[in-house]
Length: 183
Image 1 (cartoon, rainbow, N blue to C red):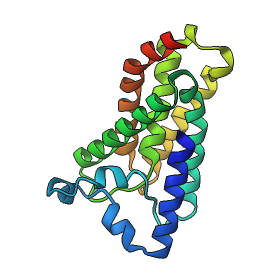
Image 2: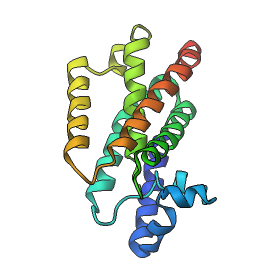
Image 3: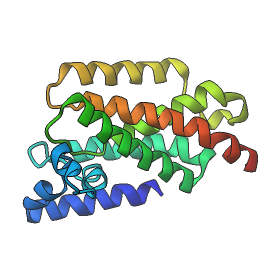
Image 4: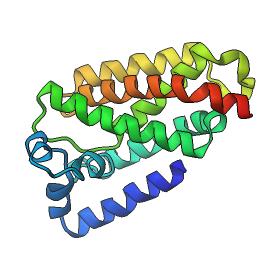
């Protein structure tokens, strides 16, 4: 499931490279979204900055694939897609509330997976095999590093990361009991 999301991001990056107007049509602009351009809440999560090419898409793809492996095992592919979709909406909503004029990138999806992994670690650890878990000190270091990056770099949409993270956490808390009972 998550490989498909990353491949979709790569395909859209190819479209953006061929025609930069794709970014203008698909980025999340709160005023345009409010005016009825609803697709932007989805497309913005799959597009990446041409100015930061290839770093932006590579970092997001690595984070999505890495954390999705940890989340998709216990939740399954469909629930993992639900977590990412809800995290994407949460990322764009938080961006809008923070007053960002334009947002693109899959980092809200990645942050949602990190939030989901934290929920699994904190609330369902006893039901997860050890090979499906992260070392707590390592995980804490990753969270602190991401928070430092969000605060230090002006181009990073920290509110989007926070929104995706929180929604991913809540979504995993709601989806995990049923998913783990089935496993």
